[in-house]
Picture 1 (cartoon, protein in one colour):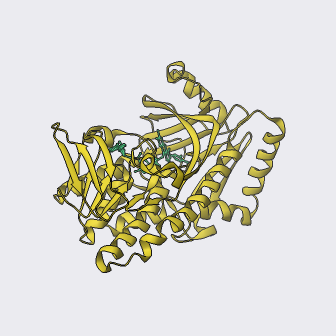
Picture 2 (cartoon, protein in one colour):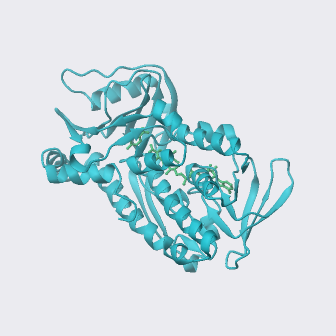
Picture 3 (cartoon, helix red, strand yellow):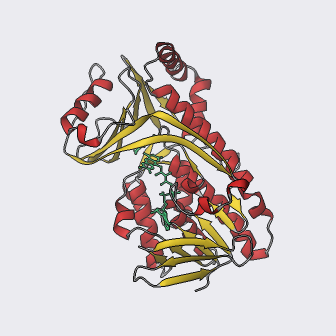
Amino acid sequence: MRTQVAIVGAGPAGLLLAHLLARRGVESVVVENRSREYVQARIRAGVLEQGTVDTLVDAGLGANLAREGMRHDGIHLQWPGERHRIDFPSHCGRSVWVYGQTQVVRDLIAARLADGQQLHFEVSRTSLHDLETDRPCVRYVDAAGTPQVLECDVVVGADGFHGVSRPTVPAALQRTWQRDYPYAWLGILADVAPSTDELIYAWHPRGFAMHSMRSPTVSRLYLQVDPTERVADWSDDRIWSELALRMALDGWTLQDGPVTDKGITPMRSFVSSPMRHGRLFLVGDAAHIVPPTGAKGLNLAVADVRLLDLALGELFATGSEGLIDAYSDTALRRVWRTTHFSWWMTTMLHSSGDEFDEELRIAQLGYVTSSDAAAAGLAENYTGLPLGT
Ligand code: FAD
Ligand code: DHB
């Protein structure tokens, strides 16, 4: 088999890149080691930056988004006794959209299959070869058990943090940075109408709590827990009473309901540089991870894809390597800005038990919610800085 771009991984990054490339007439093949059902059911991110939404709409993927997505013009920041709203449009002229990663992935898979484009699920033993030549290839075993060799001009590693692409880059040519946080998020999905119009991020001495949503009838909520905690120790009742305690506010009630999904996610920052090795380009979680506070992971993956789509478009249209040569440096500028914002939100909103640090958190929350300048900084980062800044 031969194609122009071999894409490893059918997460949001790989699927969106394949879709954008197809629109410019660049051919690709996507290989994914999980099943379609598994990939579509994975509950993860829920907030899309304005630039991510614009990209999806411009790419013809806006129909379900317009129907099911919810535009949010602000968030609530809370600490005991106080809840304050930060408005986005008045501070930076942009908004965000609540639209789940499951919905984005569903739309992308449907579009790819409707267009008759190649997308292979349940492959195994994926490996990358000859990346330092202009004839690289991807080897894998397909769902029927037949070994395949996919020859191509470019390989894109969109296979997430635990994929095979990043480890293929020789360690001597790669630099990585990692920060593991002493926190994890226990996330639930519940069949109950959200108790809030906009997301609530709450700091509490017992730990961070957050109220998000997926639709007018489905809520998504998170609790800071210790990374060693096990889901089995958190009954639904225990989760709801802890959420109610940490988000308590006079005159406000948290409605509970049946929990349909429950999971614990560790929190880390990770950056790998460069995001290119020969004819291999890394996008999304394959190259970097941010802690979830601030909802940046998916949006950062989309920003990488937008840059790489432009760069590969130029390569295949003109043969010029200017943009592919600039890809890693350009992408990493946004990666570090976003890494800082996610670290800052995480540090401000989680509880460490250190009394000095807790006072600093309350001081910072008071400042961000009372100073227009500070609120504008949060708003422009949360809604997403323009690409290339
Ligand atoms: P992924 O979505 O990880 O996709 C990579 C794909 O590659 C997967 O489908 C995987 O199965 C496939 N793959 C892996 N190895 C191979 C292989 N060898 N061969 C073929 N295919 C392979 N972000 C937020 O903003 N908010 C959140 O609440 C949030 N929650 C999260 C919860 C969890 C448990 C995780 C893991 C992430 C969460 N994120 C969240 C981050 C966000 O979901 C990611 O940033 C986003 O999924 C990145 O997309 P991606 O396409 O780069 O990687
Ligand atoms: C969601 C996740 C986040 O990490 C966040 O900051 C806001 C919302 C969510 O899953 O809805």
